[in-house]
Length: 295
Image (cartoon, rainbow, N blue to C red; front, side):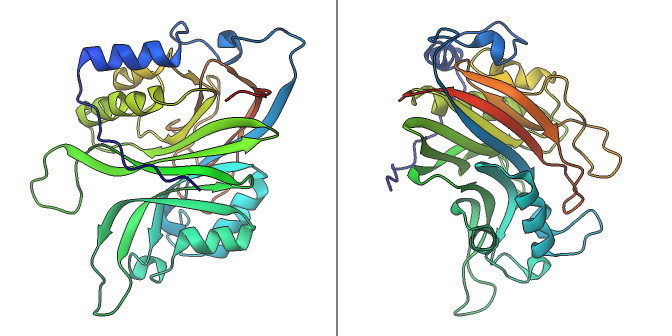
């Protein structure tokens, strides 16, 4: 499996963003994925792919009870081929019993996994495992490549942090029935100030622009789709579920911040939110069609 060196996060410059937009392809703001399909006639064969995004809250439900079997069951019920996970603990701490959640979930579900840590800290005790926290991608299809990219972050682990490039933006390349697709998992900044999220959007677009073919970006964006800081996404990508339901909190949700987004050459045929309460977020599922043979 290919593991490219981490690419440095692009600087937040208008020229870089314009280049990213041009490379990804243009669709009018607010367009649906179906509106932006290009490069294939109506009779062209398509490859189905089901994807999902799920912030797993480190394996705890909205009741704050850690239960990774419950998390695995909720993911299994999504019946997705590729799933982006956020808030994944790997030997992180007592809240998740120092479990390697990425590896354990992959084992319980019979899937492949790529874990991309945001934080990689020394062990809690001498001789222990390093403490890691980040995002992961679970996949039924084999992984042809996997990369942990840097984007702008404001650390939660240091006093008086300043925005700086840090890892935790995951990408995998998978081949589905001869079609190569790049899938990304992200978790954007949670703070009220949107400036870091705005920088993260620019950085992600720079990463996506370096890849060709169909792309799917999954994540907890910590902002609703009409938030100004997400505006640059729309065109290079489309919101797969513009009429979708709220996703946070899992019980009586009031915000739609967990999103599936796709490049213009991907068709969305259906989406839904699961009512699972194995986390404090609801998962979102999207059924997609890819142009056969895309590379």
